[in-house]
Image 1: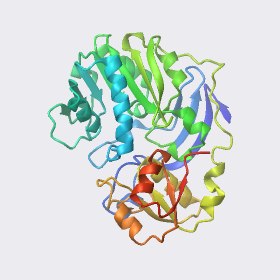
Image 2: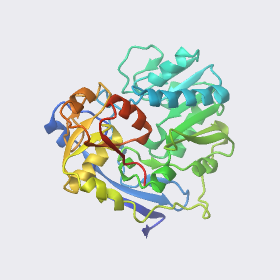
Image 3: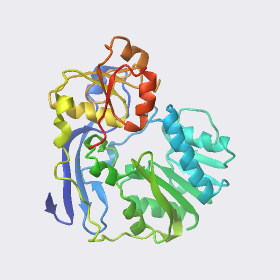
Length: 355
């Protein structure tokens, strides 16, 4: 690691896709996607981790952005668990979900009797409770609770953003925040869980420094996500805790050339979302051939992923010519049981998200 001014460099990577979950209609278009660099640093004043090379003007979310995981029954179980947290802490009346994506979670809330309005520019449906645009403080929301699922990691200056939500909500209300867990990424050396569009990387302890009044915090989805419920009025500028510095592994990329993976001449990957995109990219840069990518999301099937231009296949297509006993590299171990069932337990399955 190196120290530069008031930050400490943790991780440096070049030429990553700006939007790794944008789907492309042709290989050529995918391979010419816009790229950006990653300089992951720890701020020595706030203790927060962010991409110093991030350029927000490059971000442009639209309907070609596909990051909906709720097509999986396993992920739906996670959503149900988090719904219970929200109901217990925020209640069911007068809520706002900012960055609601394709609207699956919001519609789940509506089906369970919640009164909730959503905002997201990538929304493709016609639910009148969802506004197809970015949320900003000019919306004049006055809600009892704000839901912020997998949004804060995308927002430059996250504390200022949270303060703008507080001010827009008359300085009151509760907030539910869910983000990827940076401790999990570091502990398991999941180098394919670092993306350009994730400008911030949070630990649970960060939120105890951001909010004076944290009501509840915990982990979900096998430890990959962390959530926090806090009083919006208690937000403050965080200060670094020198007893709680980032423990970033020096050998973060050592398993990029894992013995079992590098011995395979044509990798078959299950999971065409963020993890699969970056895993494929860095494996390709190491000279390893990616044979195919399988994903259960119909919105991804037939499309091409950023930078490598690899074609995403449905399970039926991808498995049809795959000999029994072949190795399938599973991008997210949470889905292993589901994948084994869908593929009739006919293959050897390697979960790559554990050290």
